[in-house]
Image 1 (cartoon, rainbow, N blue to C red):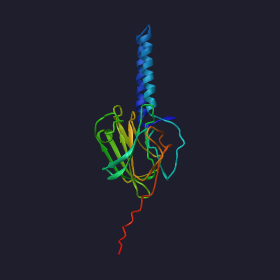
Image 2 (cartoon, one colour):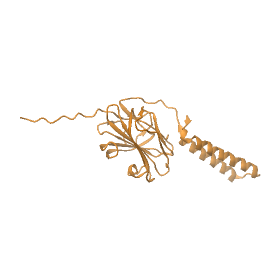
Image 3 (spheres, rainbow, N blue to C red):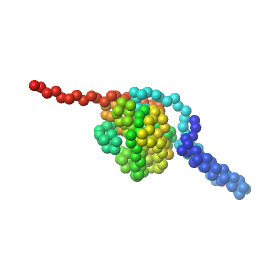
Image 4 (tube, rainbow, N blue to C red):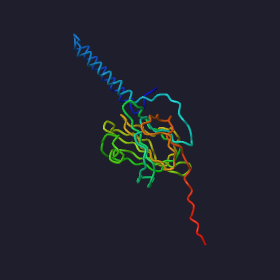
Length: 231
């Protein structure tokens, strides 16, 4: 396990502040009581909890060019038909993954592709499990063109506590499956918009792990045949 680069300065800074407070208490407080021990313990517990938000555990990634792999840790809270108007511009299926405080908060690309679209949206900070948070909260939208020409969109959504979305997407960049896409500091939610004909391998309330759990199979787009005219 190691700590993500987005949290290293915060983790080190908090530790330095705690050490300074501890040194000052040793210097100025001659007789320690329950309150002093409790206060230092509370600071250390807080530091450990914040550090865990930025942990990156060692994992064996799932590499499969016929599947989309979970872009985030968390619980599946939504699988439903949706109208995506930003990039796909049409009907699709939306899958939402809610990240709680104990999940790993790094986000990864679910498949290979080329980034065709990126946009950051300012917004509110409603609870991320609220359905409308997908369009009302602060968020980033990344449109990905798959090698076979089909489109998916990945949306990072801030929540009540998560007020710092980091996204490394650049339009025109070719990305690989399980490559880092970004980080949501203190968690929240990821929405994945995919073609309706993709076959899902997860259900609502399933727990998934980023770069490990397959969420759906990539199915070629159905071929539309022109209607024949009878003579």
